[in-house]
Image (cartoon, rainbow, N blue to C red; front, side):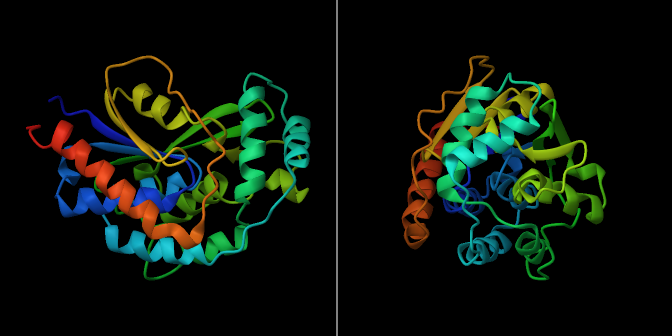
Length: 259
């Protein structure tokens, strides 16, 4: 196998992501991966995977369970996004994301900062063991913005995380010109990022649909079947266990015998 194996974390169900990381950690499979990418809360999953730090990710998930989400009605989300977006190329995806995030809710900046600065998690530290990419979009033109966190210090990483994960500034009426919004709007973005950086062998962790796909040099678009699966925080163990079992199947069928 070529040395371009990578993993993409999609969606905001970090408990499903945790099950994946738990299995990779237990089976000592980290060394199979050269890069990781993520968007939305999948950005946090990508960061902890890139640090090979399963224990800290468990603590992070516990903290995330207790955070209060800010809920905005679907039509209000879409109206605000549409008002701040000149390039309408992602209009359909924006509409779908508006429906999704109105149910999931958003995390405000102050709560996200508490997690970033938690001394037992060290999300913002640059101690990556592989290439780690986060993606978001720059408004108003919806330009793709990709950040390779290995290249930045802790202060800059903190800013990238906030723009990738927390409630976008446009919902706080603080925007004067350009701003950023989560790459979670486009489920294909984490995959595009890895392909753009010449990673062809990709494990796709789709937490919205609770499934894992293995892609080898395939160019077709990723098919996001559903965005209607509501995350139930009191069922976190169920998500973790399913992802754990799904990942073990991938390990046995695709990773175990890779040199």
